[in-house]
Image 1: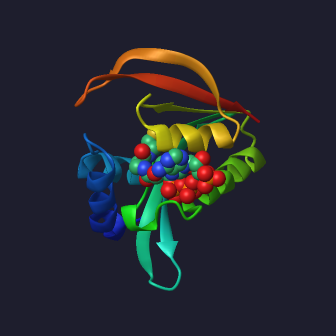
Image 2 (image 1 turned 90 degrees about the horizontal axis):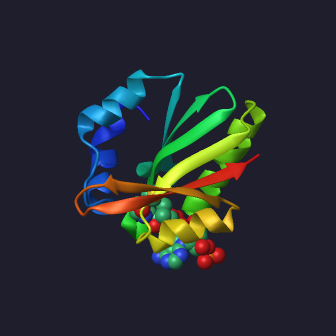
Amino acid sequence: MEVEDLPSVLAIESQSFPNPWHESTFRGEIQHRPISFPLAVVHSRLNKVIGYIIFWQVGEDVQVNNIAIHPDFRRLGIGEAVLKQVIELVRWRGARLVTLEVRPSNTAALSLYRKLGFKMMGVRKGYYTNPPEDAFVLSLHL
Ligand SMILES: CC(C)(COP(=O)(O)OP(=O)(O)OC[C@H]1O[C@@H](n2cnc3c(N)ncnc32)[C@H](O)[C@@H]1OP(=O)(O)O)[C@@H](O)C(=O)NCCC(=O)NCCS
């Protein structure tokens, strides 16, 4: 992901989350390389950003901070393919544990994570705002 991708990324973000990240947060992730990995998913034929994933790797620990696919390109296997590739990448880079937070109401994301083997690690009470909701913390041991 580069700064010039941000208009497309922000459009997807606002269509994907009730409390979308601000542009400054994405800029921060871009600036925090190499701890942060902000990756854009580009449609090869349309040459257009259709999704992104942002994760941090610190040693053996990986935290997935954001993943979204443009609504027009969902349910095509792209989110799963992206997450699988990231898991292989971080495994190759020495990761042992991948964690992430998800709203209990986000059945699509929960289903994706469970399909890839993530397990329930805990609950963060009142983690989300707008609307308020706990977070499920999921983890995958590599
Ligand atoms: C979650 C998200 C990234 C999934 O991306 P996607 O490309 O549509 O997902 P895929 O097509 O790769 O689906 C893979 C698996 O995810 C699950 N899944 C995806 N969308 C689903 C839906 N609407 N309902 C139920 N399960 C769903 C299924 O298990 C699916 O496997 P299957 O096709 O064998 O049933 C996408 O829905 C999205 O961008 N949502 C908004 C942002 C978001 O919620 N991000 C996660 C924050 S924690």
